[in-house]
Length: 323
Image (cartoon, rainbow, N blue to C red; front, side):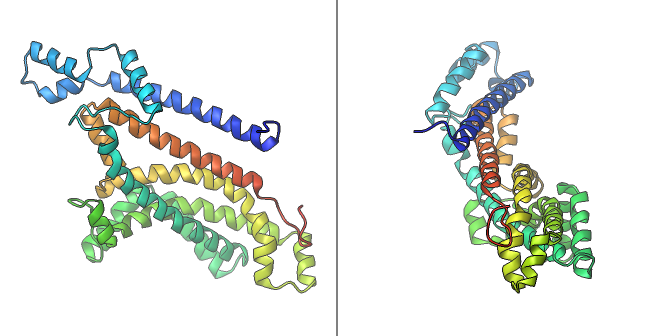
């Protein structure tokens, strides 16, 4: 395997940086969990057990071991795919977080599948006809959504569409993943909130890129050569206009991930945010660390893929060559 190519060096550097970031994140989260008052034994005893019984409970849970040793033992197991056992119910952590992660992953994938075509289509529609009523409406809507926090938009949609008009369910309360798959109407409001908030800056960036590219001389030359509008947009404008948007999409990926967690909390979605809040309340360190580790890996992977795509996207001129 060759390690001398720029792409290989870039990929290895990103992997090393990502592993370092994940390690720092896990250490900080574990230290913060130690700073919380009480531990899993205190939560489970609920001020009923005596001192000896609490000590026995701590021993049973392994909490009498030094914190650094507990962390290193968990880290060694996680490196082999074993996230340990939940302090709260004694089940393997993988089983505890499987369904919540599937729910969160379903929402994130659907949001991303909607985000890209919506943002690109709206950005191209506005940028290809700047100053028109279409451009003004799209720009105003994107600025409006960008200025409204996720939880505020969620509350407004619930108040109007769910409570006032009764068109959609207001919350996931009492549902699980199977119910979600069988009744997709539960997904509409959360997806609107997630996509609207993160698409707004992406729409404006695509619009700006399209306007800039449309003013380039090679675009004017392509028009003089009789290149059709659709071919012009797809073959010559899109590769150049979307290159900077790909970098923004990486930051949007982080925003989408955090937006999923906020939306889950507002709509009581049985996803990973609910599982994390429950684990923090139970001082369930193995579950907390597992959730942070998996979400951290996902976020790092998303950023790496987006950076690679941004580097690989080569601007194309009107004659088909690279600029």
